[in-house]
Length: 261
Image (cartoon, rainbow, N blue to C red; front, side, top):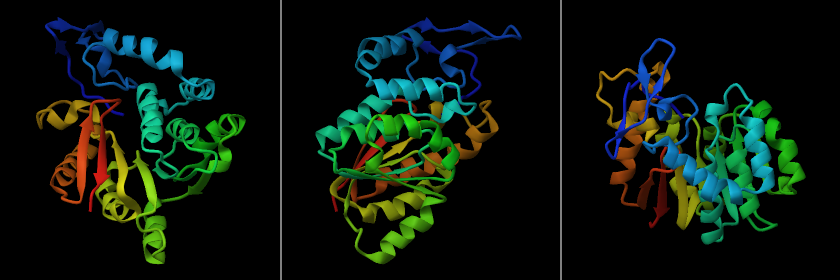
């Protein structure tokens, strides 16, 4: 998740503002850690309090609250996106899945809770320490046996799976929320590993709105750096004849790709 340093946003002719320490007016939804692109904080809060939080499984609530105390909590999946992933997996009857980029495991737990008892998740992240923050909660939820966690870069693992030959077209669902500069490289490999009719979900494809920001707009350094990679991915996915796509303004933007050939 990222922020752009815009000073004002309007939605339905209503401005959402707060006062910053230097007297500048900034919109609350642009603050670090806000996981929605909705232009109204009140509307986003309504969604959370009416639809998401009342139905959030207790383990996910516990993990969300633990993650909120993490210094890098901005990296977590939003609660509404977790709810969406959980329902989506049930709708497609997913059983064999993959997740690239785990952090403390909120989206991983949403996935594990949705899969049948014999479902499997290949989960990869370069930092096992963050994963272990959520692991006790995942274990308490009784779904840790579904997860095969691998620490380290995902690309070498994907290359080995492709070289082995037995993993082609075997995954029902793959979720990517990792290093944006490698999204294109992930896609080149994942398109072979997901089954025909299966789904790949790429997170952060709206990059807090930076994808439509002017080139000279004030942005944090990492937002500006990764913005071009996100733009490249979005363009490539739209032109890829092997998939059908749907870009959704959930969380920081998630693009679903359904492999058709």
